[in-house]
Length: 135
Image (cartoon, rainbow, N blue to C red; front, side):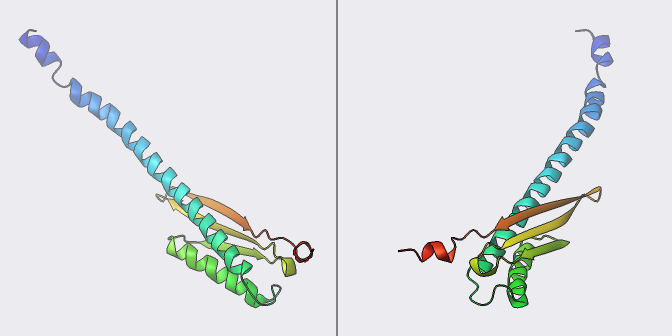
């Protein structure tokens, strides 16, 4: 290779890096944003399931506001422990036979560019008392 050919290719690596690095950076930022959304989706599901567990073992009247407050408090505690912000919790008491439904929704700010809302629902599925009372 001649000296003139080496000088002609001298800046090509710098130009190639200048073209590839923004694309690579955008790709990595997209991956991190997607992982944050997935983590928040999982955390909302954990909060909903924990709240349903509290509702399942609640020993008092399931139609009372104390029941809803206990379930909501547990969902809020778990959501906070997973760093979820802007959380909305909806509790639908199942009455005497269980079947409580808890929905946890959270708004996530992804790098200040976009707000994404994730929502998870958990349902308490218990056998009815009539089925348990059979001989």
